Structures are given as structure tokens and as C-alpha cells.
Length: 440
Ligand SMILES: Cc1cc2nc3c(=O)[nH]c(=O)nc-3n(C[C@H](O)[C@H](O)[C@H](O)COP(=O)(O)OP(=O)(O)OC[C@H]3O[C@@H](n4cnc5c(N)ncnc54)[C@H](O)[C@@H]3O)c2cc1C
Image (cartoon, rainbow, N blue to C red; front, side, top):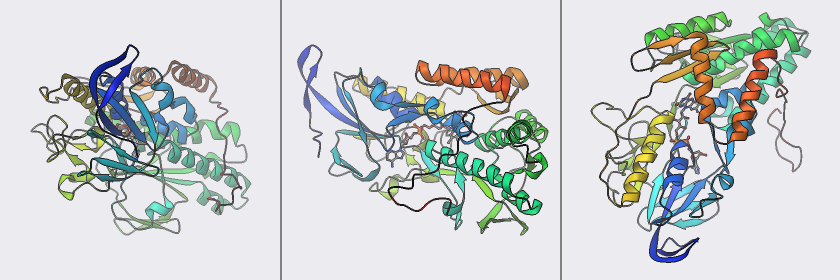
């Protein structure tokens, strides 16, 4: 067990005779990472817990799933990021329990004491209680899920190429994306590009008509959080990529590869990619009263957990800060997470909570494919090539690490010119040590 008691500082210049508090941060995503980087090393010893030993970039997960990028291109090891920040240590582990009385966090490997705790564990997939989904659908919520989804897609293309029976081949190559938000639109668009541009080049055995890509959305438009203009542009782009988009369509169940819709109609879909909902990552041990809408944690306008204002904070996707302007909390996207982290770091470093969080909405964007993206800024919306280049630029500059930026840029230029990537590798789990094979 690590001690969370106040400690003497030993900085580069030796002891400074001041006591440092231990801040434990759960989750090194956009919020946790930005906070850890900014906390004053003279005041705080920071212990960052994350189940992965790297920070990653969710906006590009769909490109891992569609073989456009490799996982390492958009991930960055915590130990390297904090090499020069001596007050931050990384602790691998999945959080199992938080003891708010004893000020302890227990992970899969250890129990850590804290003086202050920051919860920035983001969200997880929400299947809305539909049975069988967690066992049968594929997701792109983490790097590992996106890579697994990529393997499934490649597996079906290879098996389809070997299948002489047209009906069975078409079944194997039927993909359903559930959810018409940015992630659903982006993965459906990437699959559409694969069908239109990659198949004729690399799978001569397959007729592109053998592949069906369907996107279903319960709402009457795609990208509901964006402008109507962007929604209708995204719809046009997907039609252009031969994606069958069904609006006002809900899914009720999925079992034995048969999907059932709200109107009772059902059909075979071999691969179902779920992007339709998220809820706050469960944090066992927290009292029920602090958990609000969507499993998010209720915080005040300083990101302090309601009832635990002195010692616990929540940031980013998992935080539910209800204000007049955002009665259901802030949008679960990167900017609020980053901005809340910066605001909390400022308050903690100042030693007092003077600055309330105010969200500065810089706009939103989504991409559907090459030269097809949509951008909404405060007063203007635009699409097409300009939006696509803007999307690429913003995502490139947001990535951590020069090597990652260069790798991603090179991959994109290469793909733009040739449609060819060496990333369509189907990596199956190893046989040894013996474990059940996911394809069995
Ligand atoms: C596929 C996809 C596409 C997206 N596209 C966009 C986009 O284009 N633009 C945009 O602005 N936003 C996008 N988002 C949303 C954006 O990624 C999130 O809003 C943002 O990541 C939230 O930051 P966070 O720090 O709150 O959580 P996260 O970035 O999710 O970080 C949470 C961290 O906590 C760790 N963790 C979680 N649970 C535990 C646990 N129990 N124990 C230990 N560690 C844990 C995770 O490993 C992770 O590192 C997308 C999200 C996804 C999934």
C-alpha cells in the first residue's frame, strides 16, 4: 500500500521544506492527462492510475478499426510523457473500489491512499439493458476494441473471398453500424470507402455488391448534435459511399446474427458495430447519491463532487455539471474534458476555488471519407474538401508526440494517393498460453 500522507518535497534543488499532497487521478485520457501535466510539482505528488499504460486518441479509433492507422500511431506511453515531470508516477490498474472514508483507491494490483482524488475515467459502452449485446457486438470505444473490430472485418472479407455460395458470401459480408453520431458516421463512411476503393484493388474475388453496409439511427437525422446542414451533407456523403442509411430506426435485439428492429422486422447481419450509447465508467464504492444521468458523477461548477467538495473531483465525460446553459451536462467530447482539466489545475495550484468552469465551445466536426467532412463553427457550417482538410489539420495538431504526428500524416498522404496501406493485417490472439480462441 502506498502512503498518501503529506510528504517533504525533494525536487531537483533538494528538499524545499514544504509538505506535498498526494493527488490520485483515475484515468489518463484528455482530462486526466492535461491535469497531471499542469499540477504544480511543488505542491502535489501525482499518482495517475490507468488500465492502459498509454494515453490514446479516441477521435481516430475508427481509423484503427478500418485499417487506416495503426494503434501505435495514436497512442503515447504515460511513462514517456511524464519522464521529465518527476512529481507524476504512473500506476497500471483497473479501479475496483474507492473508499471515500479511508481516502483509498483499490485497483487490480494495489491500494493507494490519496489526499485528493480526481476521477476522469470517461465512459463505457451502454447497451441499454439489451441482452446478448455485450457478448455479440463489436465496439470502437477503446484501442483494443477498435483493433478487435478491425480483425473481425478483415476476417469476414477473407472468408467471403473463399465462399463460393453467393447467399452465404453476402451474409458474411453484411455489416450493420448502430448509431448515427460522429463515431457511427465515421466508421460507416470508412467501410463504404473500403467497399468502393479497396475491394476492387485487393479482393478481386469479391464483387463490391456482395458487401452491404447499413447504418441505423433512431433520430430523424444523423449527427444530431450538429447543424441540420451538416446532418444532411453527411447523409449525402454516406449515400455516395453506398451506405444504406435508415433514419427513425431503432434496434431492439441481436441474437444468432439476427437483428430485430423496433417495427418488428428482422434480418441477418453478420457484424454489428455498436456506437449508439455510452454511460459513465462505473466507479465501485462511490455512494449512489453522487451518480446522476447517464451514470455520470454530479459535480459543482468547480468540478468538485457533490458532498465531497474538499477531496474528490470529477472531470470530462464522466462529470455531470448541470448549468442553465447545459441542463444535461456538457457534451461528451474532448474540449470540455481538456478545458475542465485546465480550470481545475488552476484552482488547485492557486490553493483556492475561485474560478468557475465556463465552457468555450469551439465548434464540432466529423468526417465521412476522403474530401467529405462537415464542420460547424459558431456562425458558419461548411463541408467538402475544405472541411476535410480542416478536420485533418485539427486532428494532427491534437495528437501527442512528433513521431505520431509524422506517422499519421505520412499514412494519410500515402492512403490519399494510393488507397494502399500495409495495415490490413489480421492479428489473431496467440494459441499459447492456451485460451479460448475468439473465432471458435
Ligand atoms: C470512437 C470515438 C470517437 C470520438 N470522436 C470524437 C471527436 O471527433 N471529437 C471529440 O471532441 N470527441 C470525440 N470523442 C469523445 C472524446 O474522445 C471524449 O469526450 C474524451 O476522450 C473524454 O475525455 P476523458 O478524459 O473524460 O475520458 P477518456 O479520454 O475516455 O479517458 C478515460 C481514461 O480512463 C481510463 N479508465 C477508464 N476506466 C478505468 C478504470 N476503471 N480503471 C482505470 N482506468 C480507467 C481509460 O483507459 C482512459 O485512458 C470520441 C470518442 C470515441 C469513443
